[in-house]
Length: 82
Image (cartoon, rainbow, N blue to C red; front, side, top):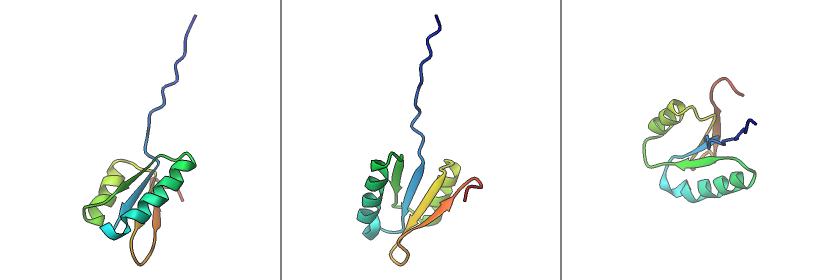
């Protein structure tokens, strides 16, 4: 008898990047709402936005959202997805 075991690897689906600490609470609210809908999301901040975007690109995160004061969020779809 062959027993098949399904192993779920927790791959990050969405990365929320905060421009500064003042928008971190809003980013956490957005992340909590996304998690309610079954998305795997992470909030990142504390570095320059270009470094955060580069890290998300290197990690091959499918969707990266930049959250700032003027524009609440802008999503970047990586890997040719629109």
